[in-house]
Image (cartoon, rainbow over all chains, first blue to last red; front, side, top):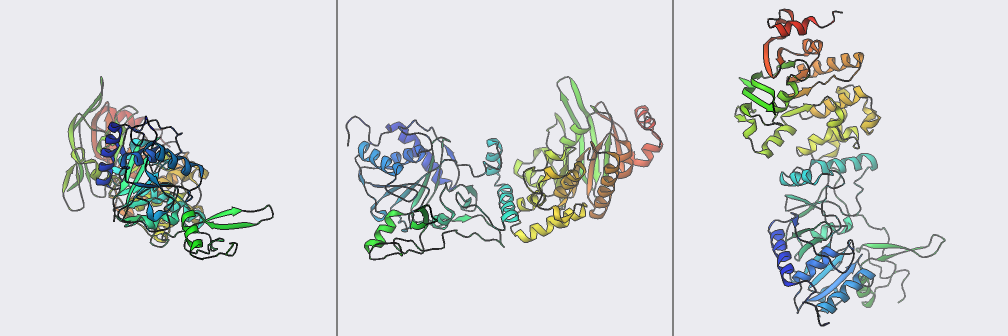
Length: 285
Length: 255
């Protein structure tokens, strides 16, 4: 741990303030709690909300994993992981099973999370209604009165226009049958994982200064119609490297002749499967 | 039993008395027209009756389907909002105020159904198409955006959107204002048919005596925030008692 920093960068008063917001958020699942977001040494949109929540829940014995679009080795993930290794001296890992705190951008790990783990989401826009209703006064009133007909109008428009609900990421959910919530820009594929998850789920939006949470074992239901039920969208092929058929896949363009490769977006999951001897059609045994 | 009754409504905007001790009664299935020149407090009265504006004094009572009477301005806001999106409807003069211009006609009509909890796409769409047909909009326009609609169609779309939940009481603020005469006539005919068939009670604000004569059972004439004369439509228009009503009736061009 580098000298000269308070543990996990933030000062203790700020962490207390964020923890109070977190407690309130856990008490009212899906409700957006305002908090005094601090300047962090990274730009807005890179995870300032998530990093503040992580700093507030991190203890010296925690093991931290940071993922960005499912990968442990992208800039954002590497930087935030190194940031906490430096300012908190905590152990870091890329293995989902070993981590106690997982900060994530745009994915939920494929491996099922346990009740001794916390997952922290980076949220760019906490308000699920923001594209439909521009006034925050009005959206707060809609949340207060659980008046969510407007969100269904959006789904209706999708079905009328495309024949299906065409939201591929940031698919709105109802938490505990009460609050409409944005799950952050995770693919709709990951939505079912949030339902009755044993791990505590925390959401931090730094620029918008909002925190919300889903306590363990809470009902999370993706919005849909009775005759157009929610369905997770994924690539039709198995992973090219590990052959997985049940993981979320990224499409990688490999040449300029139409060549493409589908690979697991969760790099840790893919590596583990390859170590266990699974080989996809583009993989090397 | 009255559906809606108001007692002693008063409201001032600074020095201007917008409403002075106004009493209104509305029975089930009845259309009440409020007429008067502009600035006489018609729209203010409509806003107060519908709970959108709180009066300085007086009460508005609404009787729900179970026979219970509610003081509209003492109701908790969730209850009032529920009332506004199920039992009540509001038709604006400018349909753009009520419609979502970036949502298709079908979505506009279906919104109140979905707000009330409808979650079956097929049924919502079928009902939307049914209502578009009832207001004489071709069913093939169901997926078109309102901005491709003419003024008269927009007003009819607004009416479909309002009536889709079968409200018991509809507030209408100059529903035919800003439309040309032939479109007005068709729209009036439509409103009259729908209101009679569905047994809807309505409070209709208009400055057009002809509209009131065509649609309303009873009429209330307003001048400077007061109701100066009230009675059956034909009675008031054929035998006006108050000087102002006489002026209003005589100023209409005889065709």
